[in-house]
Amino acid sequence: MRFSNLACFWLRCDSVLMTHYPQSNPTHRAVRIKLQTTPAVVKLSDGVRAKGRLQIISATGGLLQLPVALSEGDFVEVAFQTHSGDVNGMAEMLNPLHAGSGSVFQPFRFVVLEDDAHQRLRMMVESVGDQTFAGLRSSSFKS
Image (cartoon, rainbow, N blue to C red; front, side):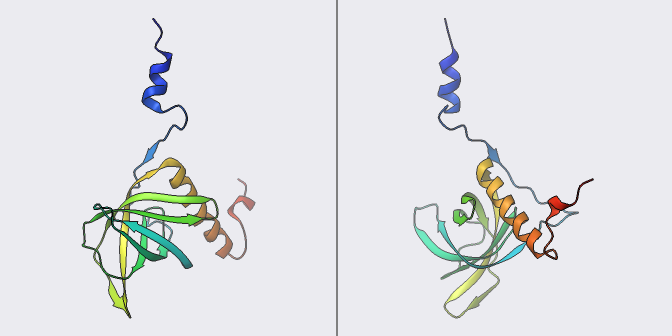
């Protein structure tokens, strides 16, 4: 009896997806980058979608500008595009900061990201961080 196809059934051989659970480190704050204009879509648990703009992003979360505040503690799906591809992850909405004219700024923290999305997000944060460090890339420093 052969069970080789059983692994493909459980792991979806066409695309094996791993999951990353971003963790904040109390002794080291995640690098944050300020973005110009990055559209984002927030999908609520009831399927309703809200368009927003990503203002700040890090490997552990970010700050969205939304038309209306979402409830603190809401679990949502956040999606946006980077130069490396789409980033799509589950997030928890945090307490809204303040309202602007017709919008609100609301932080979120990533709860779950697929490994590919986490890699794209890290590459985005690192590339922008590298560019702002006096024009030098971290890969220029060899030990």
